[in-house]
Image (cartoon, rainbow, N blue to C red; front, side, top):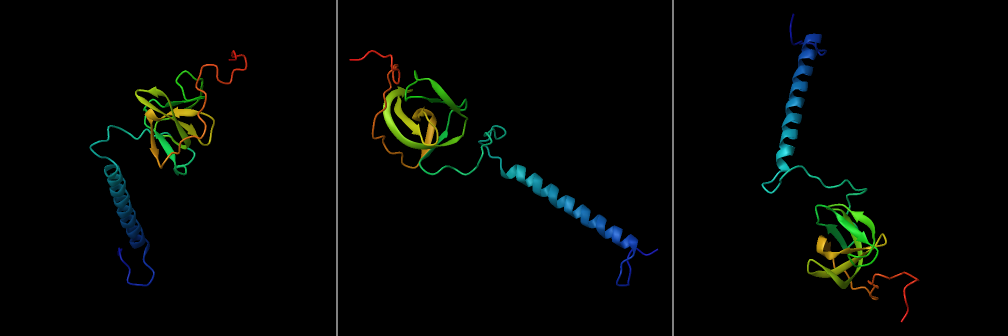
Length: 155
């Protein structure tokens, strides 16, 4: 029985042999490319697997935007103050649009707070790396404890 045929139609054993060769070559190529992919993404600075949160989109928001730098995430506050109620939370490396900035209650020496563009709330600049130029807010927000409380004493 011949493994190769001289006619225009290969014999069954020759076809099976060719399929095994092609399958073996494909497996070797895929294995090499997968092994190479793991090496290509690592660097001496990597300390473990990528733990970035999965977001709805990997496209960054329009500038200006900020990226959360705190590994534990960041509280979104109702006003630009650590004493204001928490109204949301941003995960580590989450990107969020920034509308404007104010100078108010410092956090670890940084007095800048950003107003978020797509949701109500404020975040401290201490744990945000901004991309693009963030304008100053035209009107400074009230950061007192009684802001928005109609029962606050007047005068």
